[in-house]
Length: 444
Ligand code: SAJ
Image (tube, rainbow, N blue to C red):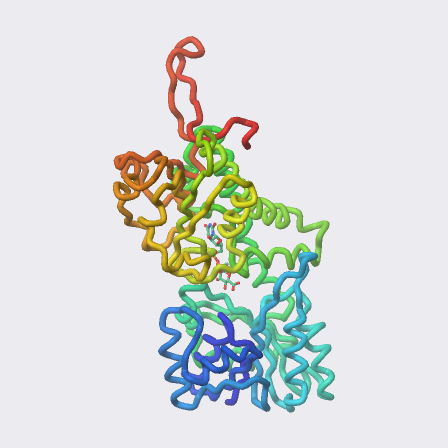
């Protein structure tokens, strides 16, 4: 078949490459000249294991070509972004533009597939509504389905093949045809349903994760007050066969989990209360970490120098979209009295890519582990201590071992751990737990 993939981003390009390397001819369409030029040369901007090789092969074999507008094909797959608008609703203008661009091309018997994350009803109402402009009837003359991607950045190619998929047709025939198309490379199960159900499934998968992370974040804050280590609590609670608590951190980033729950809230603002609250809790985490930093730096006079390790939205990727760490860095700077330096060999951000960790920590008062990139797992704490002006470490990912950090002469603090130091002599000799490393109530 000839397949037109519209939008060559994190989802569209790998999808185009998979179809092209599994027996189809693919026209990759994008409005960005940089992406088209690179693809024309068989190159890609997206840093994903294995992707470069597949793209190079598909382009060199003439199976994947780059164009700036769609051309007649058997199937059209829409993979454009659905960003969030300032009013927290989904901006569907890219989908609208993509559908309009294929109107002159759509013929009887074609398939139109939406992969972009969308509020329930988008395929049926917006996409089909616009497609009627072709003069043909969706569902009767051609087939339309919602078939969301579910791939994890960093593992996109293998998850494209192995993950199950939910395919929501505007009618059964549409769903079956689309399932048959994807079966050329998908090894996971493919479940057939209606389009609104599939749209909601996609949103709720990411919402589940967001709510779970918010629960972990709240637990971290509660544990800090109670002098308990939340990470230990989570580890042991997860030994229960029906518990799967996620992990706290400095916030939730990326273009999916930090965004998609709002598309449910948008549809039912009065009812989707927990979903909204979870979003707000996760969004407030950079501010919470800021408060901890302020408390830790209280005794330092003059400019407090903070070295931040990792700025991407999660480990071992180069993506800084919606990164909570970047929000934290901006907040620190807005406070005044802080100087912040970032180190991240993955990210194009303020020179952090080229910066050497041991140079960056020179004269710093706080070392903040913000993203647990693999290269931060083993660092030389003695070298770090020698260079720092004040020996303070805040680990927001439970990535380092307290004993190892402290053996180097640094003081280790962990997000979600209100350390207890028992001070004898108070309260009739009964040990009184005192939370170390945290500010007083006014700080929190
Ligand atoms: N995070 C935590 N604690 C955790 C797990 C994650 O704080 O326990 C944070 C990360 O640091 C990151 C954010 O959440 O800032 C999101 O990271 P992620 O790895 O959970 O997810 P994404 O956004 O990279 O990809 C998600 C995936 N969805 C699910 O796992 C349900 C992926 O499968 C989707 O395809 C993708 O969203 C998408 O495109 O929608």
